[in-house]
Every structure is written in structure tokens, then in C-alpha cells.
Image 1 (cartoon, rainbow, N blue to C red):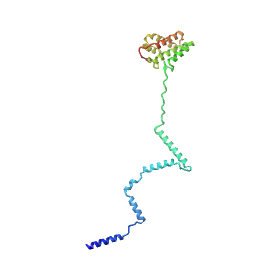
Image 2: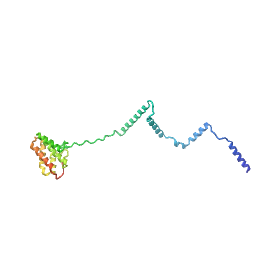
Image 3: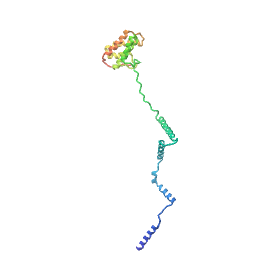
Image 4: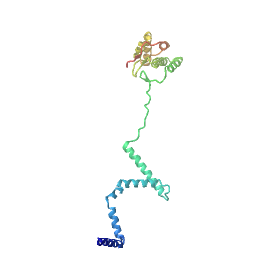
Amino acid sequence: MGLIRAAVRALARASDAVPPLTPDGDEARRWAEQELSDPAYDVAEPTPFDRIARAVGDFIATLLNPDLSGGWGSTFALVAAIVVAVVIIAAFLLWGVPRVTRRAAPRTPLLFGEAEHRSAAELRAAAAERARASDWDAAIVLRFRALARGCLERGVVDPPPGATVHAFARAAGAAFPALEPRLEAAATAFDDVRYLRRPGSEDLYRLVESADDSVAAARPVAWEQVPA
């Protein structure tokens, strides 16, 4: 046993006498390469996407850098403007030019196939003016239009485009049965003057005027849709 203890003490004194291991330059580089070749370090390597994103970020940061000197500031501004223009053009090519929302043009009110914007009151005033000037043709046409527009404004009769004056008179006569003969006579007067070119007269004008006044004062008994 004493022999073994002496051997152990001799080995311990020998290991203490060995100087620490210090590698030279080449050996240290080789050890570092071996260590970094460990697959565990691959996780920290940037991917190609990371490199591209970093380059784009650096480029944008450079464009926004207010400390650029010399002619580089204007150069980068020009490049940025070109990039924006290219993006806008590409967007137009892909999605087309933005459409401008347009409101539909208001439909022109038609009365017996002709455009007529005036109200019943305005048409009556125009008819009275032509009557004072003894222009009976125009007065008769305007007063019958006032009669038809008045029924339209009241919602009694709705003449669609293309409806004839006699079709209107029949529908209005159904709404005002007591006035049906006078409505037919007024429609005939309008037809004769407007389409058959027969001369108008004060008597015909007063006939149409009376029919219009009576319809305006009467109460309809039914609502009718004028056939086309």
C-alpha cells in the first residue's frame, strides 16, 4: 500500500510540472475553423432573402438620408422618382386606369314624344301669353300639354313615351268620367293643330282651357296607366 501511495504522489508532481497547452497561430485558426464548421452555427447564417431585404432597406435608408452631399442627393431623388413612376405604370398595366364614377344624366321628360321640362303652371302661363298674342295654334298646343302635365304631377295619369293624345284622353276620361267627352274634344283640337296643321281658333283654345280647368278642379275616381 505504501508503494501505491508513493506512485500516485509521483504522478501528481509530474502533471504539475507540465506547462499549460498554448497553440500557435496556425493551430488556433484550425481550431476556430473546426468549431465554426459545427452545424449548430448554420442556424445563425442569414438567408438569401435576408440579404435582399437588408440591401433594399439600406437603399431606402440611403435615399432618405438628409446628410448626402454633392450631387448624390439629386441623383438618389431622381432614382426614387423613376422607381415610383415605374410602380405606377405597372399598376396601370395590371389593374387598368381607375374608372371615374359618372352619374347617369337625368332623363329628359317627354310629353307626347317631345321633350318638355316645364311644369303645368308654367305651361298654362305660356299658353295664356300666346293667347293674348292671338297665336291660337301655339296656345292650344301649350294648354293641352299643361292638362297632361297636370295629370302627371297629380299621379292620375302617367303617359309613357310614345303615347298618343287620344290614348291619354281615354285614360284621363276613365279617371274623370264626367269629363270624358270634353277631354276627347280637347285631344282632337290638339291633334288637328299640332299634327294635321289645321288652323287654331279662340273657340278651340277656350275648349281646351275649360277642359284643363275642369280636370284641375275635379277629383279622380281611379288611377290609370296610359297604354303605349
